[in-house]
Image (cartoon, rainbow, N blue to C red; front, side, top):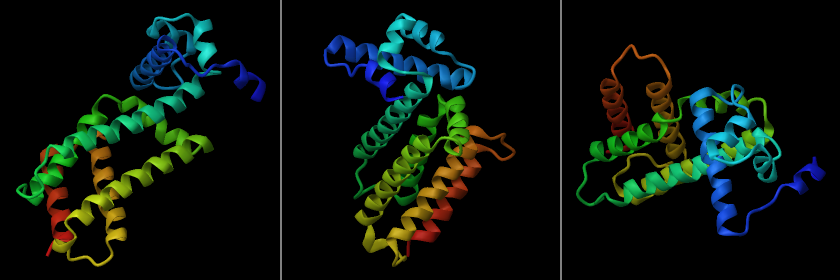
Length: 205
């Protein structure tokens, strides 16, 4: 494995950086549309506008590009959330509006990657490297939740904010996943409304 990895290159020039990013983005779309196991490296290369040989100069196989897709997806998701939250005036926004805004931002981020998320759920239990990366991203999300809770700490009725960050983060993530990836028997608006009310009742005095 090490000898094969040595043959791949880390891009230094801007053109090579753009080529590698194009491969990652093409793979992300194909994994989302078709699934990881139904996609091959030839398709990824063609979608990125490069030769199959060029693909292998950057990645040893499609699992390697899947891992880079996971990195990129996590970074862009957090950047999208931070950009969305930065537009909020925390002094004037209502609690329900704030939580709903966060839920809607997550839903928008999940919408385009249904197939990709299904693969992540499977590979989390079968690939230790992917599991570790997903666990790290989970912790980043929890710490971000903790940060937002600490900003309004005086209004909280819970004394264990760290535990609360896990409960809130898990609750929001679970319902966002249900809305995004599961058959619906209850409307999205009803689920969001109950989620927001549950979090408000749990957190605030």
